[in-house]
Length: 362
Ligand code: SF4
Image (cartoon, rainbow, N blue to C red; front, side):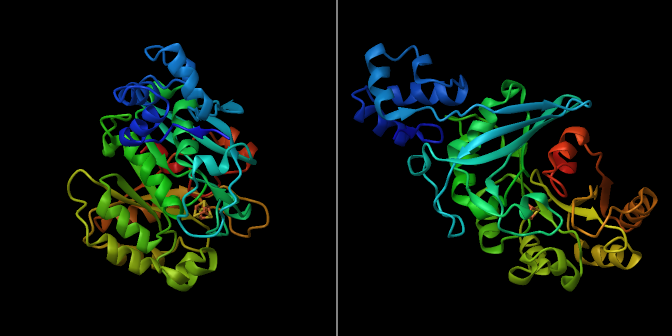
């Protein structure tokens, strides 16, 4: 069973180098091959001696899995499927899944979506296989939970897509609740933003959550990445009827927490609001949302709902969505209706229904 190098820090790579009989400076070389050159095989690390590469390969692999399927939408959006290994650790929130633990055991596939938009190319990445949050309008939630993605599983999505070197932004809005796998998601963000890693600015990354409060606080304290919160209904009882998380972490508490942080500078917060006809699209809802977000520097993204089987709600008509947006804007809350991208391929797959698409091109 081999361990994956992808996701390791320079200190961890130093230990790997030492153990493999390589000089300590080889750690920097390995990091460069992994995170800058984005190689898929240890044998491509050509400034490491042939014998050194052979010793490394005895115990390690890069961890780049490659995709198993690629579909291109008529609007240029590209969906990728990735095989992921099985996690036997389904239990605890944020339980770490090491790459050694999961090596070699299949547990289905997760997807990533590349969304081109003028001079931007945004990758929407998955953080878990399935999800245990159980939002009723979400196909991923319907699938149940199959395991946390490891750091390598997450970073592999960035490296494996054909557009890897052209990516400008990333959103953690694919399958799974990123704050339910925070240990691995935060390490992936560390690699993405470190000088020794991908070297991205945190401004290029948005994490989307339904509001796992204790972990959200940690994220807000530790990270400078943007935040997106799935709100969907300002009334607790109504939100609870489609989002079980409301019981443990009410949206009013989530917003109280968000208010304690500064979003007037470079870091931004946005709220995702999927429009369901007759459920959350009335003036009463708009006014409650205005009260809830009053004084907070934020943006509201209104999202058309794409119907899923055995769920009774349908999307609001365009005119209702536009009126809802205008009411928010008149009250001083910036609201936009996001264009759906890649509908043909996403609809065919039936995944990422609900919150996952609209904001990605923001
Ligand atoms: Fe999980 Fe997000 Fe789907 Fe809710 S909307 S079930 S948090 S993937």
